[in-house]
Length: 279
Image (cartoon, rainbow, N blue to C red; front, side):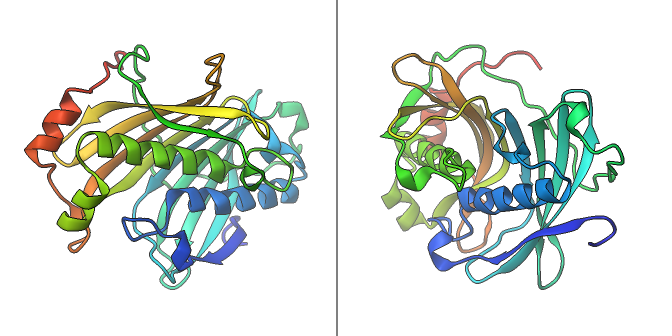
């Protein structure tokens, strides 16, 4: 333990866990966060808490992890109320001990199930920015249509956190290609899409063999930034399994800095903007 924070994961970035932006794929962050959440829950005597359906993750990425990087996760309970428990996770570079990402996890857990002497630590990370949601699904387009496979399940037989995020990542790539940020564009121009903020909300879990549909909308357009909202649902009923807000920038893969969107991409994205509710 470090100042009350418990080390809940220690790992490395394998080369095959990196994406076309040449850094740690966001879904694999969630693979390790799942381990961290389970370990912390066991330490707190809350077995089963990470497997509860209703969960929310708010993640802020502040520095890249690239192939070969070593890192660890420090976790602690940071807030609670009558209906939920909020856990904090710091993803830390094991070499220089700098925080590379901050993650807040909210789990639906009644206060009566929490330890009486639960010690809450102060959260040293940034406050969560609650973004406005789309006023409707008009303008959303289908970006993933698949079925749940055995490889998508975790140790408890549930649809894994990483499986959700892998599908949403595919949705963002489809949406980018639709506005002209195709694989050939990214390869030729040495560009990528780098996520700096995620808000994942899980409502229910698709079961093995279930059909899943991801629909994606563009809800914000900046000089170099694009914010997506993705929803994973049952294609027959429209019932929503999960939703992800994803904020990122076009990244210059050589300079490793944000790069302005070219006008043709900007115009195509602007034509697809989905209206938002008032903040």
